[in-house]
Image (cartoon, rainbow, N blue to C red; front, side, top):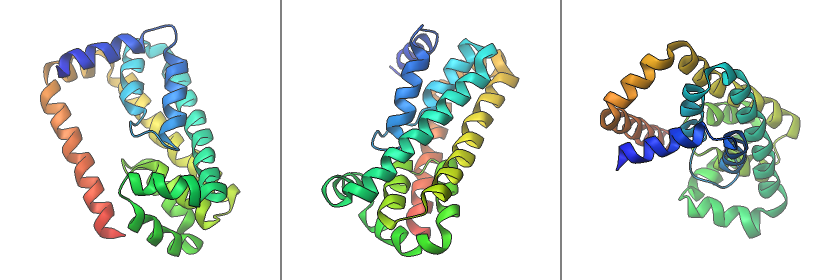
Length: 193
């Protein structure tokens, strides 16, 4: 089943509408959608290595735009939309703690959230709800999301087909490591904040 899902994602990555799908997923992930765009960036760069930097740029711009939508949810609609989304993701306590420290640590929180597997939508909504300066928010989002997506694209571009062969040969192990790291990051964030 995992192999079929991987093959379908790789096929989508080579599709003529892949860039639009990537932009949509990147935008949505920053404000409400649970699946990170990295799962599409990797196979897209593998399928079209010459477009690696454009893929990373589209992903970054759409993610920052989606982050601004999440910021807007937090700032203008926190009570009606933002709070239910944060509670849906089980992060109400984290969001309340984020709001308390945003004034002092806002740049670093946004940057850390943009680089890690922590649900970025919690950071974007909390930034808006806490009233973080929109310019600080946008700059931190652009820096962190850009660094993350360009680094992923660069690694896949550099290692190219060998990384694809490695992933395909070791797909269950790669998926298991990814989920362990993701779960570990969630636990680390939960107990640090």
